[in-house]
Image 1 (cartoon, helix red, strand yellow):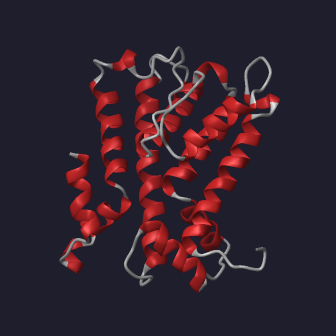
Image 2: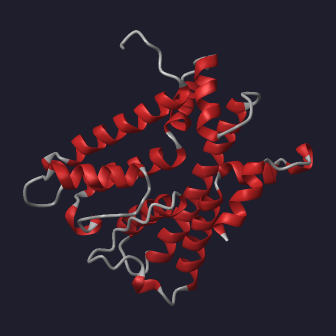
Length: 231
């Protein structure tokens, strides 16, 4: 079993399982909660929900988890939402490492692409686009919320909710399971969060094919179907 090499789909499944396990362990530490005793079941449920971006919670994110716990949840959302291979590619490119055929096959599987041609370039665009959108939206929310929150907290809330919204995770930090109900009549908050949901819901592959349509003059079946599903 140890000698048998995993196929790309199997490797993706195992990677997500390992990520959930690591997240569960980190959320089970005393530093991850504000008070009380860590609960393994709550930790593994929250880690799984964050990685799989389901938005389901059994405790209030803003009041139960400490800053460390919230940071872990945010990172799980980011890695789970954008994909483990995205970050593996990011660090490989950052360190100047070569990306071999097997890694390219896993990347192809992760993005459901018909071939590995240009797959590294697609991942590079994915990371740049995603980080840029999240950073811009996070700063807009932070500046807007700084009127009611102190600036460090507004910045943290802006970044967290930008990542949560872009990855369609549904986690929030406002406490009391209130989510964004305070901002129901706030056009800026609603516009930014809604835009993040829409862009994140369409997915990078669709947005990338729209961006490259002038050159390729075609959409894949995936990009034709996803907008109809989202509607």
